Amino acid sequence: MFIQVITGKVKDRAGFQRQSDRWNTELRPGAKGYLGATEGVTDDGRFIVVARFESEAAARANSERAEQGEWWTEMERFVESPSFADSTDIVTLLGGGSDEAGFVQVMRGRVTDAARLAAIRDGMGEFESTMAKFRPDVLGEVIALHADETYTDVVYFASEAAARGGEAASADPPADVAAMLDNLMSAIAVDEYLDLRAPMLH
Image (cartoon, rainbow, N blue to C red; front, side, top):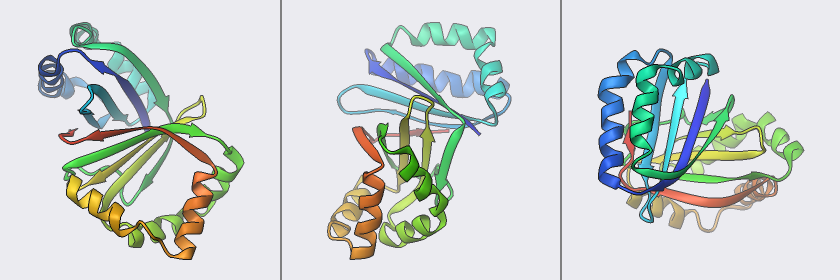
C-alpha cells in the first residue's frame, strides 16, 4: 500500500467540499489502483486528506493525469499552504480504516526513538490485542510512517461521543496497559491533533 497525506488550511470550506465531491464522482473512476481516502476539515480550518493507493506507481500515474492536474489547480483556489507527505511504511490495526466511522481523530508527530518503535512493532500482535480490549470504541486505525521520521496516525470511531467516552473510561489503565502505552510514548511525540467531526470517507 502507498499513502499520501495532504494537509493545509482551508480558505473556502464550501469550495473545498465541492472539489472533494467532484473528485469522487468525476475523477475517481479513472484513478487506477486507488483504494480510498479519509478527509475532512477541523473546526479551526485545517484540512487533511489521507489517500490510499495500491502502490506508489499507481499514485504517481494518477497525479500525472491531465484531469487530475486541472482538478488540483481548481482546488488550490480553496486552500493555502498545502504540504504533502508520502508513505510506504504503513501499519494497520483492527482492520485499518472504517467507512462506518462518524468521527475520525488524526494525530501527527515525530518518531523520537526508532529502535524502540521497531521493537514495539515486532510485538504488534500483542499490542493490537491489548488495545482492542482496552479501547473497544476504536473501529480501526491506520498509521503512516514518513521518510523524514514523522508519522500520521488516523483513528476511526463510530461517533465523537463514543471516542470521548472511551477516553474517559480508559483514563486510569491497568498497570500492564499503562506500561505498554508509556513504552509507546517514549518512542514517539504527538505534535498535533486533528478532529474530523464530519469525515468524508470514500
